[in-house]
Amino acid sequence: MTLPTLLAEDFEKFSGRPPEAVARALYNLDGTLGATWMATDGFYLVFYYKPSGGNYCRKAFSLSDALRLEAKTETCFAVFRVRFPEAKYELRFSLWDISVLDKISRYYNPDKTEIMGVTPKELSPVTAFCAGIHAILQADAETDEAELEWLSQRVPDQAAIQEGGSWLATHGREKLLERIPEIMSVQQRECLLANMITAAMSDGVMRTSEQEALDSFCKAMQVKPERYQYFYDALLVKNHIGVIIADAGGGLLDLSSSSPIVIFAACLLGMSEVDEEKHSTEEAYLKRLVAREEIITESVNLLEFKKLDGLIESLPGSLNPDQTRCLLANLLGLAMVDGQLNSEEQELIGRFQKALQTKEEDFMWFLEVLLAKNNLTVLVQAH
Image 1 (cartoon, one colour):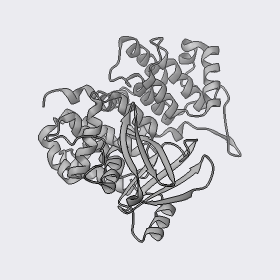
Image 2: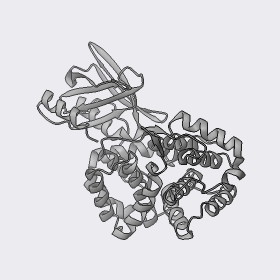
Image 3: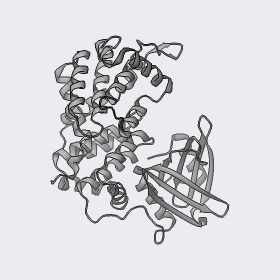
Image 4: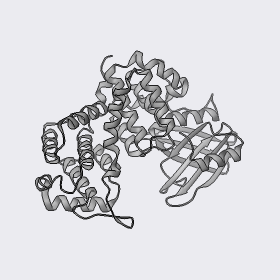
């Protein structure tokens, strides 16, 4: 992970060198809504922080002045605590920032600092998967917290998240590339590949550093270019939510009952309620795709008015072919968020597919790729 350009320039001007480790906290430095970037060159610990909608400020400290510094995992977050004579801070990060926080801890005191996870002597498929996700996230300057929260919920062994990060921090990406073909099956590698592509796409921008990292992993995992493109294109259709948003003019969002984004959200709500139980992973998925409260409100109204049967009968309605493909891919993604499709979900997906008039080959394409992505149980299967 790297600092945004303006912050990176300020850091180098301040310290005289670029940062060696960077992590982005989930909130402002005081715990309110906003953002905080934490960076170190091994000598200074620098915080760039701002409230939601505000401008960045900088606070810098010498690491040697710290009275205490620790990084731990608590529930679904990594917590970084540091105390200086004049100030103390507690920041929450994604679990997937563990390897970076571990590295910062080592800069402070490599002999005494309590680090976040013990580096395993050997990698398992699960810890290799986690190390791979850490590696792709470090190639990006932004992270999608909802996607990472889903990953932290779905990884079969939570300790593997720590161990994967620690292993990567200790041995580096090149060593991981050497080890993956030896310990992961083809199915396990494709699961990793699908999730790495998703992580790289999560902020809507595929950066050169991310593409280079993906290329190196594809080569190491012996993934043919056409197979990579097959996965990439399917996930691009799913993640390209921009095709759904309709501008009513003047920058206003169309929230009428015929608006593609309202229809899209209503269909996803109907899918989430098919088993009459909305799981936390489904809620995180919906929140990531449809974050605006007014869209959710209108989609709830549409679903209550038409009911699920009426909503399906009205499809594709105002949706164009690109929008129907995006909707179907996300309906599958939501239904498979727990790694499987139960009978009720299969039946409802079939009804949506027929109503959306989606080609059978497109449906099978999305199904194959999303199953590879979501079925993390393959990571605990024998190689």
